[in-house]
Image (cartoon, rainbow, N blue to C red; front, side):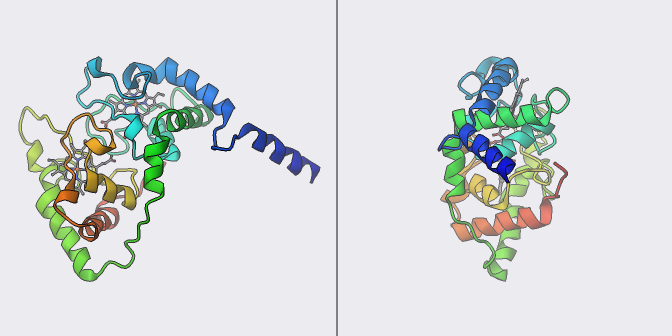
Amino acid sequence: MKKTLLTITILTSLLSADGINKKMMKQGEEIFNQTCVGCHGADGLGVEQGGFTVQPRKFSKTILNEDQIFHIAKKGAFYWGAVVTGMPAWEYVYDDTSLRAVAHYIHHAFGKESSESVDVLEYNSGALSEKILKRGKKIYGRNCAFCHGKEGYGQGVATYNPEQSIFPYDLTKILLSEKQIFLFAKHGGKHWGSQRDDMPGWGVKYDDETLMGVARYIETKLKVKREK
Ligand code: HEC
Ligand code: HEC
């Protein structure tokens, strides 16, 4: 009993009111400045002259929460649906504790506000009608398949150009939740930190319910649950 109390006291003294763990912040910042900064920049906004085919997205606008940042850092962006990427898997370099720390740092130093704008939004696709669900599939085929491919692998006709200059994600592999898929599709890539404007925002064309139908289609019919 005493031991539990002691543990609780220690834990709460490490956490400040805004959920910041000072020890993790310090360790995370060190790793970030050692390893990630060269590509992601000291401000987390990405480095322009990195010679990337696809530049890193701006962390200040990220849709990702802390846990997701950890998982992408661990297994690399390719594992989670990026089709060409200079973002390696760091699990061979750092243990989970270190990667949790760097995710904690990225979240609190750059991405907290943007990520929390996702958390506060209510999302309930459970009540969508059959009609909307059918429409979701149709709209996927009509609009998204052009880039992401009919099966979602990221190889739609828009990528057939031999000088391919557009790299849509493989939607079967993505880490995003259904709500995040909806929000990414609604507002487009740029809104969520992409440096290029290749992924349009569909909110100008379709209402929320319709886009929820598309997100539900991707979540339940295309996405494959993957080991973390
Ligand atoms: C050699 C360059 C390079 C280094 C070093 C690097 N990254 Fe990346 N990272 C990238 C690129 C490029 C992307 C964009 C991937 C894409 O979308 O194709 C990326 C994407 C990411 C993403 C996903 C962001 C999003 O919005 O989807 C996370 C999280 C991330 N990196 C974390 C890290 C962490 C943590 C480190 C250090 C341990 C690190 N990166 C080091 C190049 C790098
Ligand atoms: C003109 C090509 C194009 C079309 C059409 C398109 N996308 Fe994308 N999409 C992209 C590109 C390129 C990216 C990755 C680059 C970026 O971050 O902007 C992307 C990224 C995404 C992501 C983010 C995946 C992740 O894990 O970060 C989602 C979700 C997505 N698209 C859904 C959709 C949906 C839903 C539609 C149809 C309503 C659609 N896209 C139509 C090109 C396209």
